[in-house]
Every structure is written in structure tokens, then in C-alpha cells.
Length: 133
Image 1 (cartoon, one colour):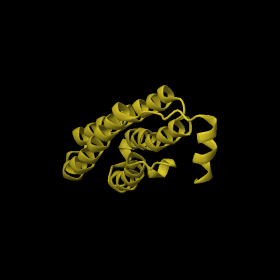
Image 2 (cartoon, rainbow, N blue to C red):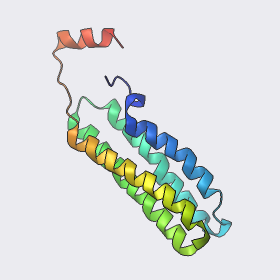
Image 3 (tube, one colour):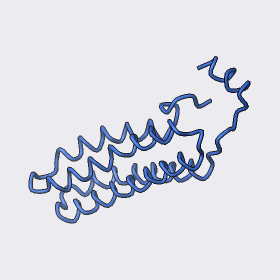
């Protein structure tokens, strides 16, 4: 059962990837500060948007919109890393590993978006549901 945002695999993966990304970006030259900053911003927005959307999960369309925003941010991270490869080719091997992981996250976000359905509780069921949380 999914009771909190941390129960979502996409959330856990997005946090895990942040650590990997920060380690990878430490190897980028200082001349690419703006690219690194934009990449970090996009990556940090993924778990933030998943969390915000999950908080509003009773409104299915709102949650799904936040998943799409997270998907866009994941794809943006890939674009920033590909740009980094173009200007700093020596990072290519490590970059490709990070890119593969973010592509996997994007696929998982897309799948969750397609398959998520909010369960509409009746008020009596709702109090019973929250009793176990």
C-alpha cells in the first residue's frame, strides 16, 4: 500500500539519483557553473514535484500534472548532461551512466502517470483508512 510519498519507487529513485548526480557534477569544470546549477535545479525539482503532487493526490488530475512536471524535469536533466558531454567530452563515460538512470526514472514516471487512479473514499471509509496511518 502507498501511504506516504516515500512509498513511491519514483520518489525513492529520484532522491537516490540526486546523490549520484551531485557526485558526477563535482567533476565538471568551474567554467560550466551555469550548466551545473541548472542541472541541479532540475534534478531537485523532481522529488519536490512528486511530493507536492502526492500531497494533493485526492485530486487525480493535479497529482498527474505534478508527475508530468517531474517527467519534464527528469528529461531536462538528461539534456543538461548531454550538453555537458558536448563541451566536456572527458565526462562522457560517467555521464552516460547517469543519463541511463534518469531515462529509467522518466519511464517510471510516465508509467505511474498512465496507471495512477485516485481512490475516492466515502467519509466512513476515509476515517477507517486514516486510522491505520
